[in-house]
Length: 612
Image (cartoon, rainbow, N blue to C red; front, side, top):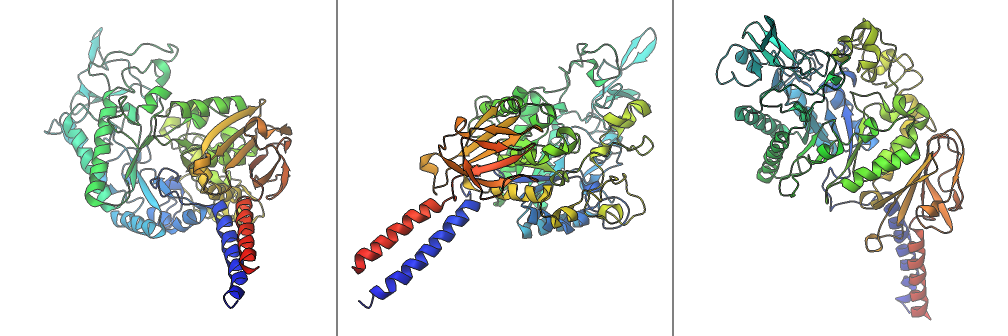
């Protein structure tokens, strides 16, 4: 009898612990069988506009270091930085003059290494922008190449040009992405050099093995100092036709526009994939030698699905390339007018074509394209962020999109700095310029939105920053930022890190998908989450059983800003009412509490049988 008196208290303790484990299991379950990046939330920082600590009106590396705690608190796993290396800033850092030197505008190499150390302390990863297609015309390689100095003479693509009717002309009809001919005549060398972007960004000659070897060393240099990965910029421009043939005409109306030709000789050439495979080997060899977590490579290429997916691996699967190529379907193919059927089509298409065993990713915004709130509409911001966090694989957020920041479209031509806009003149700059989505981050409602104490910032702050800023949203009961926090926490659950995926369009404007665990994967009695998004301003009612069989009631796990529903609210799965623009996440009644209850009853029954 002496031992029996301890059984009931012991049972109570076991029940309490079981209940706590069940509740915690609902929120987060480690995915130790996956590498760090496979379920990560990546956060792109545009350094010029993130946080200025020296009052020069331009963000800096020390500012990023000071704000790392913000990233940690937000649930970010890794950040990638737009270029911070030595540059004349003709294209704001994408014209690099020294790949191993931080530009003084942003700080020093010591500042960057301190950023790596602080990020490691906080459990964050820092990924660097890697710009291998071209250099600045102020890079020493180009200066020596222009002078014909070996071994740099053939580091770039040079040609004497052609003559028609006694007039000297560029070698062919190729056009720059930034408007106008892709060729520039060098008076020093008396030859044309190729530049697929600005004339201050000469293209490197990747048919010269020495050029590739130079970048092998750049990658090793920054891995040694703490870089956790590289985002490879504009990679599909890396190789051009060796014979420099004219491209077929696409739009004869404007011979200076990039759309003038079909880019069959200047983009997506097969040699590119071989170089990516080589660099993947450089990264993997470094990790094997040094140990530690994977150093990743993610590629940027605005290309069709077939060409994009080739960045994962060779057709036979034997050659590994990037860890993942950026998936731009949310930017390139979908927008404010897209229907639920459109979303289903492009998402399902991507997942169905994903090479077996590879990790997908979803990029909702970046520094080159209008912001999420401007492309999709402010009322759809929560729905888009929920979709980003709920879909399988990696999620990529551009700084400020978590607040619902919008483009600053009232920047004057005199204030415009982006060459992509400036080259089109006052009549055409407004919608070509990328400045509107690059304006300073809106931290609070103080001077310059808390970004800088300078009398003037490099780009003007959005005039409505007092209405939309981080501090205001942190203090509000409901906000885009608080919803973003909840969505990031949600995706830590095993159903999102390991679950299967199925989608459905309920009419034109209600889109839904379910993440669910197979029976053998379901470690808790918590097998599914249903994500519902109403893309319209009209109420909708859906029967979730048409997507995933629930039969009876379901419970609200997450709601968007201004939702009529509350977390914990239960409803019939057959009639889920969605208000205008509403976003919801539904799951099993009481999460994993049914398992806890079943085990609790079993413990009580065992104790009673022993006692009596």
